[in-house]
Length: 275
Ligand code: HPA
Image 1 (cartoon, rainbow, N blue to C red):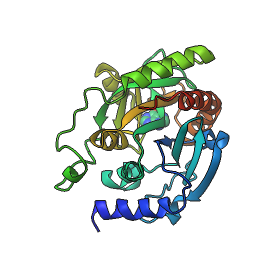
Image 2: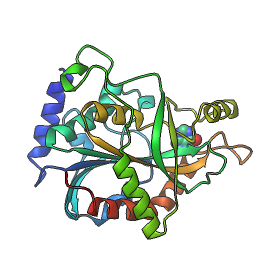
Image 3: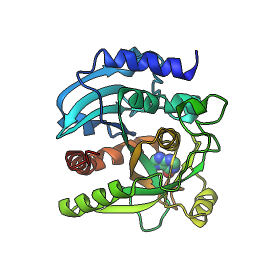
C-alpha cells in the first residue's frame, strides 16, 4: 500500500475518534510524555491501535496519541515517536506528520532529547532549535512518490519558524525559564557519539546532537507546516570525561526538565498565532 493510502487510513481512524480536528501536532521525545497532563477535553489512544502508525520500541516512549486543547489551540500529541535506528524507514518515521496534516494541522511542535555539544550547555538545559544539519544521510522525501505531498525540492532556508522562535524566546523570558539556542545535528544512532565525532560536530557548527526530529521536520516543511523545535539537553555528547552516557540517565534528565518544558509549551500554545 502506498504512503498516501496509509496516511488516509490512519487519518480516517483518528477522525472517527477525535472530537475536533487539530490545529497543531506536538511530538514528545524520550521521557517527555508528561507534558500532556494539562490538557482540556483530552482523550487518548494507544499508537498500536491506529492503522499503519509506527509504534515505538524504546523504553521511555509510551506510544500514545493524545488529543486535547490548550487555550485556543487544538492539539494532536504523539507521546512517543519512532526513530530510524529502530529500523523504520524515513517515510514511516514521518507518517504521523502526514496524518496530522491530513487532519488539518498547520503547525508542528517537536521536542527531543539531545546531547550537548556546545561546551556552554549543561544537562537539563532547554535549547530552542534555530536550524538543523541532516547528518542521518536519509531523507523521507527520497523516492518517486513524495511529490504527491508537496514540492520535489522543498525550501529549508527557514525550517524553524522565526516568529514562533521569537514567541518562544519572549515567553521563556517572561516565565524566567532559561532557553539556550543552537543548531541541532541529527545522526542515525543508535550509538552515542565518540569524542572524535563530537569534536567534528562542534567544528561543523553543531550545538547539540539527536537521533530524532530531522525526518519529521523535513516532511513538515514539504507540507508547508510552521515548525517550532525544542531540545532537552540530557547529557554532554561524547561525555567528555563525565562518565559513560546511559539511556536511563538521558530519560531521567529529560523527566527533570519536563516541568519547565511543559510550562513553556503550554503558554506558547495559549498564545499561538491564529493565522
Ligand atoms: N547523542 C545523540 N542523541 C542523543 C544524545 C546524545 O548524546 N542524548 C540524547 N539523545
